[in-house]
Picture (tube, rainbow, N blue to C red):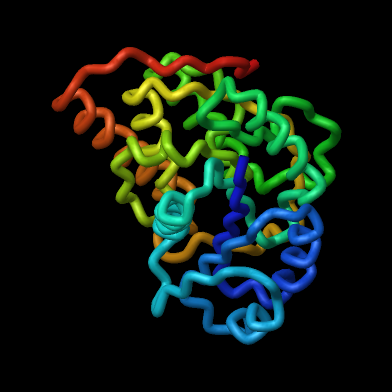
Length: 245
C-alpha cells in the first residue's frame, strides 16, 4: 500500500524544517503544497527531501487539499494523509493512520481531537471550538453521521474514493463540501483519536473569516448550497460511519 503524506503550507518558516524532518522519519513520500508563501518557506523547502507544488498566489487551504488529491491519483498512491505544518498534528500518529488504512474497512480515516479529552491546556480559542461543535452537530444531523470533529485536517483519504468527489471549494469552508459529497457517495468513514494541540491563539483566517459570526455564517452557507446541489442531482443514501463514536 502506497501512502502519500500531503502538507499544505502558507508562511510556515517557523515550523517547516522541524515538522517536515520529523514527518520524513516515518518513511513515506511527502508532498508539500506551498500556497503562495511570501516568507522564507520556499527557500527552506529546497533543503528537504520533499516534493513541492507551488501556487503563485494564495489560493486557499481547500485548493491545496484538492491539488494533493489530484497529485496522489496521478502518481499511483493508494492513500493520502493530510496534516498541518504548525505542530498541531503529531507525526508520531502517522503509523496509526497507516495501520487503520491497512484494515481496508474505510475510505476516510478522520482525526478527532475530541474523542479522548486529556486536558484543556492547549485548547483552541472558545469561538473556534464552539463553531466546530455547532457545525459538527449540524453535519451529523443532516448527513446521519456520528462525527466528533468535522474540522480536523489530520485525515487519511483513500485516493480512489476521492476521485469520486467533485471538490471545488478553495477556502476554509472546504470540509462542508467534503462531508456532503462523502455522504452522497456512500463513503465509509471512521475516526481516529489524535491529540488536541493548539499552540498559537493569534493565528487567523484572514479577511471577514476572522469574525467568528461571519465565519460560521460562511460555513453554513457553503453547507446549505452543497446540500442543495447534491439533492438536485441524485438523491443518495447517507454514508456509513463505521466507527464514529
